[in-house]
Amino acid sequence: MLGVLPQTISAGTPEIAPAPEPSQNGDWCSWLQSKPGTIYKNKENPFLQSLQIGGRVQYQASYVDGEDRNGRDFNDTYSDFRRVRIESKTEFLQFFTIKAGNNRGVKGRRSGAGLDR
Image 1 (cartoon, one colour):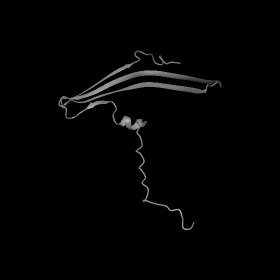
Image 2 (cartoon, one colour):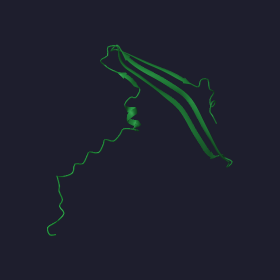
Image 3 (cartoon, rainbow, N blue to C red):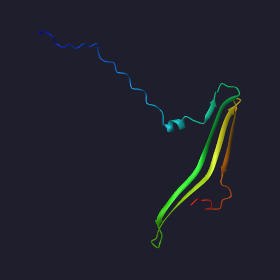
């Protein structure tokens, strides 16, 4: 058997599909910058141009660890739920803006009282 050699056939360079765009899932920084509280926005509407809601929670916690002047070790934890704030902003009639907010929290607390130990 003379003359039988393997042959390679080529139709050009292979095409490589482009990589998919990275997903934005889990990118909460860009989500926060895109004003997630905007429920409605349309500057062309003659009655209601925008409606936004928002809020804040203030909570603080601490841990203290040390040694007193007699050489005894101590540690303690503190946590304090301070307040919740709910806010809204509405633009309407192409001219007016209303901002409203409501704070709820601990009232009438003595200095240092109300801390959970």
